Length: 497
Image (cartoon, rainbow, N blue to C red; front, side, top):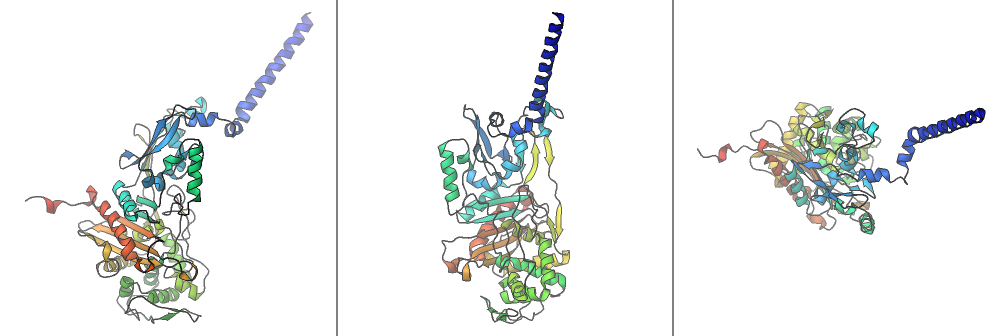
């Protein structure tokens, strides 16, 4: 009898050991696979079982959470959803996350280890900390000025603080309300289908994910290359630039829309946007120097993140002389995002230095204790301080005496460059209206803002579209909003003696 009991005990011990081994296999070896299994609802239930952290603009949250009392309990809400959609993106229980909702998801969902009271606490307890906050660099007034200025027309605005790289405005139009993608059910599925079928592409973030031919705004880069290479030594000296200019190796001639461009000095050509002068300069500077200069401004960089990815702006590295001439006036294959062109204006304003643009100032705990903060970083030195100074003078002339007059602001020095970029087969499409600019309060030493505006406006009459007439007023409104910030305003003249 004792022998049978002993055998039974050994057998039970083996069964227990097998059970423990299997439990360990399931809980340790297979835990990640089980967690990620689409059929496992625990992750989703836990994720939406607590309120999501907030994205903050100007000290106020622009996101929130509402309790639905359903299994996926908390749904995302958005204040001024269409206004901030290019910044926040969406957080959908069906379609996932985009933009800041995606890149900062660990903080916003409470899974970031920095939110835990002790190291590895969440790994051990498999719990979640109270969600943190994401404090953005966006200026609420500048954002609204950009959105209002576009007035629903297809286009985008990007504004940067030149000395730091802080993104002050990021607007894309037309936009959409990300709250309509929150929750579950047929309404959400219907909205998703509608947005994706809309030919206006409201979910496309045109400020960072759409590239356009930059047109004459690219002449800032060409002017920098000409001055840096020595092709132009004095902006006031005449250039050898015929009008019209025959593209090298072709029978095609390039002309201008203004008079006085034949052999015009760089300063005049810049203020009045002489295509012939800049096409000839680009060909004279040469492909290598033009490519190098464009790269230093940020072109051909596939790795730019703000923290979400930005589409690479491109300047072709393999062209003949005729193609190079066209590229040097922002046509042919040259493409740029509005953010990239804001970086170009920012480099001029900031003495030639391109700061890395960023959108998140810091992340915090629910109580406001900083977890991580972003410090300004230099991305490139686009040109020398001397060249930047010369370009600042030319951009100022373009506003004070040239095509950018609609961007002038009393009490501030404003420099700008207009652009009207052709597109479509045989340039049959409605041109894109561009304007890039920077502004500095008269009593300040540092620039306050650099901005780029592009307006597609396919419904407009072709002859009425111009960078100075269509895009410059939007840029002016954004710059004025930034200049009204207390640190940029000087009210001494308004005070009673």
